[in-house]
Image (cartoon, rainbow, N blue to C red; front, side, top):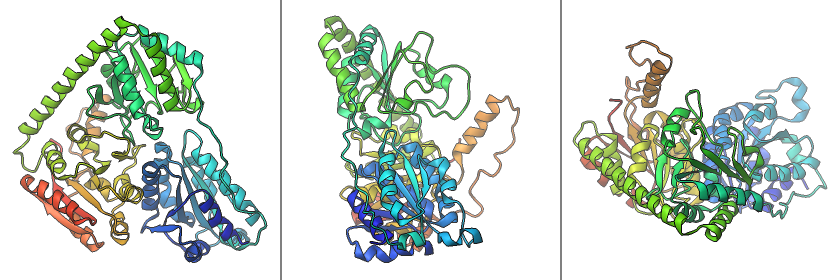
Length: 554
């Protein structure tokens, strides 16, 4: 058996039915063998970064291990930013790249470099296969490491001659490991005592809640506690229904901002996340003195990583939440239940107040020209099917997105973590491949979209029913906000203009770019036309791009 046969048999053994890739010469053994393995579809991309970005979201939306094939040193370099995003998203992903013939390594061949060294900083494990005998065992280990908590990408370099070597070592197979850990009863008891003593608990729902399918359990627990529920500043999944009265929104990107949001809480339970990704340094803690801090994580490396804990439990996230729910039901008395009911009523009032404030915000901005973000989001929502999945990279329109759209389930919303831009368009490809029966709405700013605009060609090539909405404000709006923050935080006295943050001159024509890549394009300048344009795009059942003119920074 040749190395390339071991390669494909290992993929089949691990349930891989998609390869996200960009072809190159050193990938010839893989590409030439695809016809022999019709069970595996190759999703072709025009840029390696788009392939890795699509695979990242595919892993999230499918629940499978994503598989990526890139091309030598420059191709891997092109994808490093998106692999970093997969690392931050904790996406189980095996990334491979064709490598030059190992017999050339002392001759400095064209496109040659140490691929494992390039990938190492953004992966959990990075290795080169040196002989065909190693291929099955290394790939088997790669799948294992990619899926161990916290999950993430691994990298394997595949020299072209190794893929053609003969070997008697068979294809690797997945181990039938039952790795979901049960919580320590002593830890659950400690948490229960602290929760019973709390007068105002809060929960931070990380992405692992969605990954574990534990959203319903978290809802039960939040209601039993009368706890508010927050999301991290950057999140990739929807771990709690956003229309639930307990859902309070997104945490700030600095410690003082989060501390303000937690000011009324005497206990914070963090579940299933890195806690926290900050943008700006500020002294202090997100938790006020005396606040009890609890944490449930599947990986011990995450417990007490940034904050001292009053109680921390290592467990499968779903099992940990379920154990807390049972423990509270067993020991909570009438007084606790009555206090929780009062907190739930207060949260309902807050939710109604938030909805009224957003309605007023939309009405105030309704007639502005160009279209306000608040109205644009309201009109987009009105034209979008109820069962649509949102692949999000709205950045500065994020506030209006979450106050306009409702995300009930874990698979209703996907986004990138880590802050790298361009993940939205690329990621929408992965979502559509993973969830072909649901319509997909991709929301992106104009600046972000240009990092992965080649994704449009892949959508057309594979006939993926994605409606891409580009919110065109002709600027890097987030950078303008951030330079304002920089000037304030570092006491920089300046009224200078925003240098190199405008995207006019020339103005980009996204509808034209889409048509050039085989995707129908619609340009919308008037707010009154947005709803109809979005609805019509979805009705086609084809990939479609809508460019909407919106206002810039005010």
